[in-house]
Image 1 (cartoon, rainbow, N blue to C red):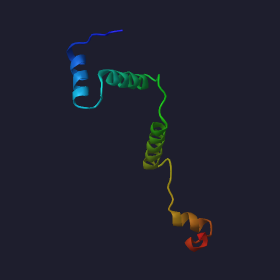
Image 2: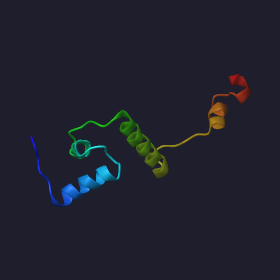
Image 3: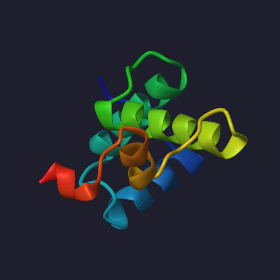
Image 4: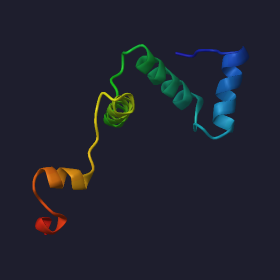
Length: 87
């Protein structure tokens, strides 16, 4: 199937390829379709994206006080240990 494009879409595709973001217009279109799939929830998130979202959630919880952090030494002290006990 051949799809003809003009105007802004054609200009953007030309620029994406000429600036080296993609090797071909087909590659650029494929990336755009995948991004739309992510935005509309048709494509699952990659493992890296899931980890990033979890880290952002944990950091927000720490900042808001919903989660508390502990220093390594305070945990050792609570357990009745010293750093030298860990060798």
